[in-house]
Structures are given as C-alpha cells and as structure tokens.
Length: 295
Image (cartoon, rainbow, N blue to C red; front, side, top):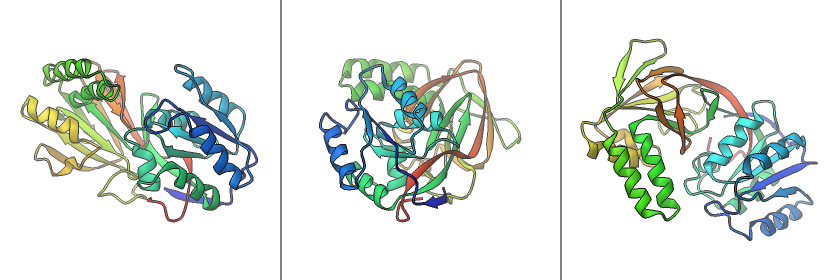
C-alpha cells in the first residue's frame, strides 16, 4: 500500500452506513454526525434500506465526493472499492461487519469510532492493490473451489438460521471432490487442487506489502473432514500450518474446472465461470489511512 499524499480535500464527504450490518446499529448515524462535527465537517450520510445498498453506493460516488466513508461489512466495502476504482475518491473502510477483513488489515483491530477520528485528523491517501477476477475485485483474499461453498452456510449461521446453515454445510461437504480445480501460476505448468487461495499483500502474514503479488496456496484435503476444517480456517485463521496446504507467491493465475467455480471474494460468495484468469493489480482503489496503520 503506497502513500500518495497527505491533507486530502474534505469539502464534500459521502458516508454510506449499513445500519443492518454486523456491528453498526441504529445509533451509528448520530455517532457519525457527532464525530464529523468535531472536525467541523458536515457529510451527507446515506443509510440504505434492504436492497438499496448498491444504489446508495453508486449515488454517493456519482456525486463526486472528496472522500467516501463506508461503515458496513466486507462485501459492501469490496463493492465500494470496485465502483470507486483507482481514479475515484479515496475510501475510508470502517469496521462495521462481522469479519472486517479489510478494515482490520488497514487499521488494525480498532472500533470504527476511533478509526474515523484518526483518519479525519491524520489521514493520507494510499494506493491499495488487490486481485481482479472475472470483472470482480478483491482486496484481502479469494478462495476458489469446494471450501468456498461453506460461505453460504456461514452466512446462514450469522443470520441465525441454524437449520439452513446445517443443510448448506452438509450440501457443501457432499459436493466436495466432485469438481477439482486445474490451475497454473505465472504461466507455469498445470496442477490440480481441491481449492486455491489467493491472499493479497495487505492480508498476508508472510508477504511484504510492496510485493505486488499474491500469496497463493493450493489446498489438497483428503476427505470431507479436512474440507470442513480448511473452510473454517481459511482467511479467518492461519491455515498455512495445515498439512493440506502448499503455498507460494504469484502475480497471476489461470483456473479451470468442469463446473462453475464457487468462490469467496473477501468473504462474499460468488459463482465464477469454468475458466477464469486472476491478476494482481497494484492499484485497485485508494484508501484513507494514517502513518501508524497496518500496511
């Protein structure tokens, strides 16, 4: 993540707060207004209803803001980064979800109120790299293959739908080993794996932030129990110590499968075509961070 400049313009600030997400809640808009007022700022705050989130993000960016603050979950932050792009306004991705992968990677594990005060007082614009795959972007990591199907079970469990979660987990395990991936890293030879994980530098524990490459890990479990273990551990825990994991660095990857490829991009479930190309982009978007933030 490269520092671009300090003292960004803040004349026009758009805020998208998903009050239904993770740890946001109905009091968030009032808290946001209070914090911005401490800095003499008067942002436009959008609190979209169910189904309106995408339109709210697009409208906020179409207004031409100097800064877009997003208080929401990982999927919303990923979408905001896609829409803003490398030449759009910087975003401040505040931790308002359950996993908060990108906010924690950028700012460390801090409450969003503390992060917001910090970036408003000391923020610098920084380029943030990530992955590009089938028109999608991801900033922390992607899981491609059967363990990604467990993402639907996780979402159902987070919503309190435990019976549905159990059913989706059972379905995911039943479909394991029915569509192994073929992949090639950096135009190398074709290899096989049950799943492939691509971690971006900001989220990797073993790569320097300036590496401009993924940490790629091939997952090769030998049974359903190992698929479940890997699906739980991947990204949210340190799966590198798992004996079913082989990792290395790469800048691009080609992935093939006989069926559509299930994937988790920054924790969000996505269905991909049977052949996809993944490339590392050193400038997916810009973020507002501070010199002391994790980078």
